[in-house]
Length: 243
Image (cartoon, rainbow, N blue to C red):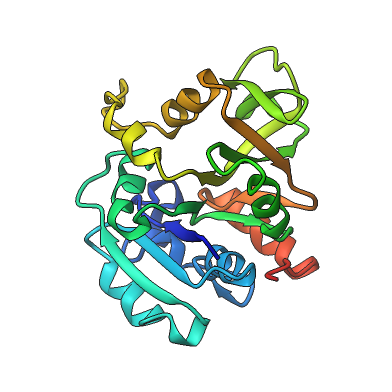
């Protein structure tokens, strides 16, 4: 398959308090498996065998000890260290050599969701030079980046709008064409001092090169105490699709 997989598993997880004092949040359990298994299984389940995991310096050894070469997970794993918190786009930039001209499927490590990503890959393959985002209908879109849609294209993304133009939230699943690394090189740090994935997406939006897939079933992040509890509840009630 002419696409590589990337799991972004950095961040301090400070919103989880004492739970992440000595470990990375992506190593905490969701259901019967560590959180990081969820995005990894989603990627491998749709036929991708080359996977990159990006994390910080403190717990990279724990990921290597847990996942090894990837052999037990039917994939070949590569690891890259994000030396400092520089944003999602900066973490993605570490994948340039790994992707080497291939498109990449990027999943944020704390995204827990029901659906397979296979339909999203199939949708995006009709426009291989477009960026592609996963979106989900939510009851409270004002808490998220909200996608404005027209036909099969995204025409706008608004962060946490007071008056959302749709009820579709942008979730942490993206497919990017090979030129995404050229785009990241043009970015300037935001007010937070980070390279923002929103700026990457806005680049493709302006060029009319962004499509979307709507995910069915449940979705949550697991980055707070409440959402971690909720994620565990969801997967225990209905196991996610990993194929």
